[in-house]
Length: 270
Image (tube, rainbow, N blue to C red; front, side, top):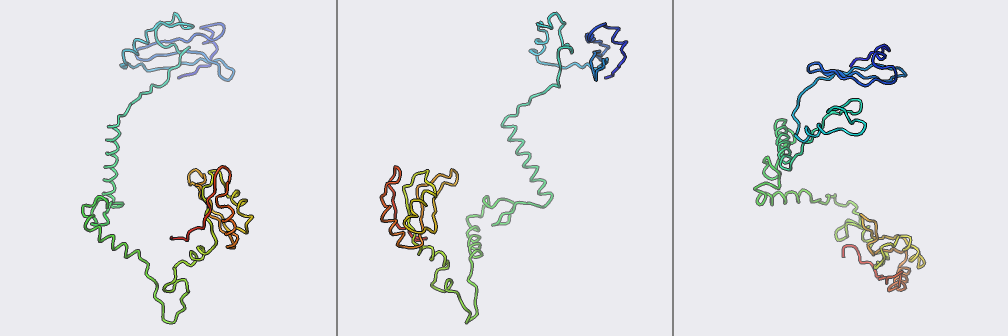
């Protein structure tokens, strides 16, 4: 494209306004001369295009011969650069599911080839040490049993050996439960309330159970995804007499449109 800013070239074509674009075809080269205003100056713009022949669908060729209408009525067939703008052609290629599956398999085979050549990240069976996944091992029914036993023995935590005369805490002495905190938690006066409405909150339970005595903990079971109450909760009091009074008073108590069910919470593990 060349730009010539000489005013005389414009005056040769017209005396007022913008001259109409000119199109000159010389062999396989098409030259289009137009006039534009750039930075408050009238300039002459010459564009060169290389002509090529391409095959198009019959419907496209027929559409190019349609009679023009409106402001373009009377113009010859083809694109007029003064009123039309041509963009780059966009070709749409539709891939079938079969092609996608074949491409996926080819990519997987190529990745496996690279892994084998590099020697890193190879798939090794944990049972027979073969180049396949463990779940696909043909010996998993025979050798897999022995492997599971070995893993269980490795995961088993053996109690540490202590020298004779060493002090042993009561929580880990023989015959004592390993988790003393669990035993202490089970001895706390905890009651279980069920048949709660979905919109029940911890504040509602606090207002309902606090008048009977100091509450040390309230656990309201909720759905992990929606956060809606599952319909039951655990209330732990500091004194057993407070929990006993709350149980006797609120059992079969009408709360909203439901009847509450209150009972002693069962110990952990029972």
